[in-house]
Length: 201
Image (cartoon, rainbow, N blue to C red; front, side):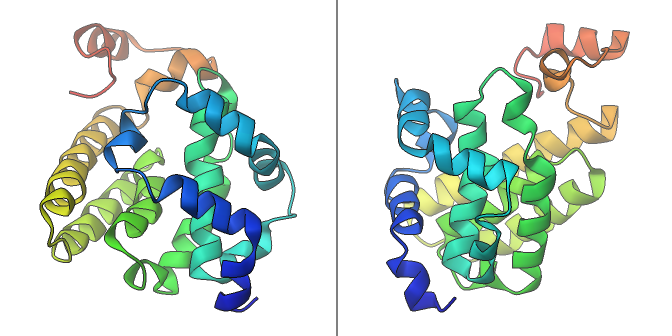
C-alpha cells in the first residue's frame, strides 16, 4: 500500500484526525466523555485490530502503522478501561511498534506521532523495553523545538519513562494492573500501591 493510498484510507485518516489534532496532554488526561467517544467512533476498528488480521497490512506504511498502534495501544485503554481488555493487545502492539521503529518510521513523522511508537514500549512489562524507550525518548527530545513539544513530549514523557522503568526494575511488572488482570499482588506491591495509588512513584 502506497503512502498516498494510506492517506486516502478513510479509517486511517479518521484516526489521525481524531488523535493527532488534539493536545498531547489529552492523551493522558482525557476530557469528560472521551472514553465513550472513542468507543462510539472506533469500537469496531479496535476489535478488528485486536482480534483479527484484517488491519495488519496497515503497518506497511508509517501512517498506517500509527493508526494501527492508536487502536491497539491507546483506544483499547479507553474502550476497555478497567477490564483485562485494556491490556489484551499490548503484545501485538509491541510487535508492530518494534518493526516500525526498525524501519525508521519514527524518524519520519512528527514528534507527537513518534511518541506513539515509544508509548507502546513504555506500556510493556519488560525492562529491555523500558531501557529502549528511555533511549528513544532522549533522541526524540533533541527534535523538540516548540514550548509545547519541550514541555509535554521532551520533559513529561522522559519523566514518565523513568517512573515506568523504576517500577519494572523494582517489581518486574506494573502492580497497578494486578487487580484488573487477576494477578496476586505481593506484600511489597500492596505497600507500594498504598503509598502510590497511581502505581508510580
